[in-house]
Image (tube, rainbow, N blue to C red):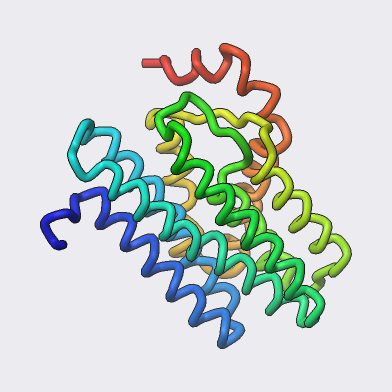
Amino acid sequence: MYREIALPDIASLLNLTSGFIAITFLTRENYILAAKFILLSGIFDGIDGLIARKISNRKEAKFGIELDSMADLVSFGVVTALFGWKITKNNYFLLISSIFLIAAILRLARFNTKNPNEKGFKGLPTTSAGLLLSIYLVLFSNTINTILTTTLFLILSTLMVSKIKYPKFDDRVSWPLGILMAFPVFLTGNYFGIFMSIILGLLTGYIIIGPFFASSKIIENLNHIT
């Protein structure tokens, strides 16, 4: 078994571990630390993809794809679903969280059965949906609006299982976002909120504007910038 674990898989396991730690902090209602470990999961998820693309045609590729999806299901599916229920403190939201979780696993399963090397994504990536909702929940945890939160969860759940195309950026475009995500992990107070707000804005822009560029050559041109 250990021989099957390659370098990208270690990043996937760190993604999973960060997601599990986020769950423990959510159970203690320490939402800021939970959000920081969710961000770490996102960073490790990006590192996983970066390393995997550098190590092409390895025999363990299929194993790594499955492992990555399982980690994403925990870190951005289970964690986000639990986060929503803990923040709203409403038992009916268990249904909404369950819908999101089902959409997340369906999205990941579809990705694994299709061609993971496609230029774009069919349906909103689970990582993007989970990160956006988690950041939204921690930023507005003290003034949460249950109706708005329910609407966001349902919209993003629908986008994940939809056939709407989203662009996939290459490493030169993804790196700045990964670095940006690292800042709030180490910051507190207003600086934490500022960087989280910036990331929330970028994710919102990707979700709203992304489909308009997915079928154009704009993203392709950006990916070829040297």
